[in-house]
Length: 260
Image 1 (tube, helix red, strand yellow):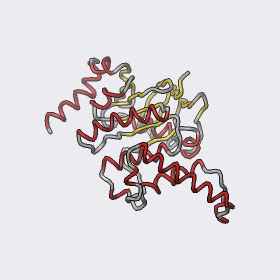
Image 2 (tube, helix red, strand yellow):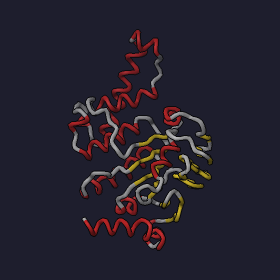
Image 3 (cartoon, one colour):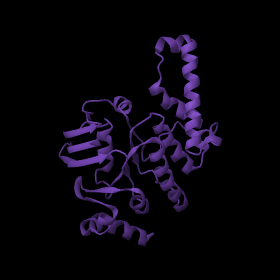
Image 4 (cartoon, one colour):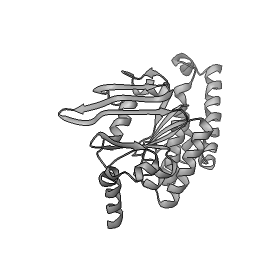
C-alpha cells in the first residue's frame, strides 16, 4: 500500500491551470523526486499536499486517509511535514529553540497547565528539550545548540530546517529544494544526510530539487512536470534517457550550466 497517494490532482488559478491531473503513488520508505523547469508546478503540488492550497480537483491521501479540507497544522499532525525553498527558520532564536517550538505540536499539556506551569508542564518542557537535543545530535548540530539560527553557516541552516521538520515526528517528509544555495561540497554531504535521516527515522521522502546530481544520486523514482503536466516518470536511468525530459528540463539545465 502506498503511504502517499495523489490521484487526479489539479489546481486552477483563475484561467491558469498550474497542475493538471497529477498521479503519484509512493510506497513506504522510498525517496521519490519531483522535477521540472521553473514554473512547472512543483511547489504548487507541495502546497496542495500540505494544505496551503486546496486542490481544484483530485485527492491526496496519507496512509490511506484523505487530507481534503485539513489545515496545514492538522496535516502536520497527520504525519506530513515539509521544508521550504526559502528558509523559514526563526532567525533570532537558537537552533535548540527552533526545534523545541516545532516539538510543541506533540505536547500533552493544555493552556491551563501552560499558564500555571505546574509539574506536568515542567516535565513536558524537560522532555521537549531532551528530544530537541537528541535530534540536533542526530543531524550533526549538537555543538550549535545555543547558536542563533542566523549565525549558522548556510548548510547548517538547511540541516536545522530539516531537523525542525523532523521534530514533528512525520512519516512523510517533503523537501523543497534542500540544496538551494549550497556549494558542491555541501550538496554532496546533503545526499548522505538525506539517506541517513530516511533510514534513522523510517521516512518516506518526496523531493523537489534542481541539482540533478542529487536527484539522480538519491531518488529511486522520479516524476517530471512541465507546465503542470506530467511528461515522464521512472527510474533515474529512464529519466536521464527520456528525450522529452531532456528537451523540457535537462537540456535547459545543461544550457544554463554552459552559460555560467
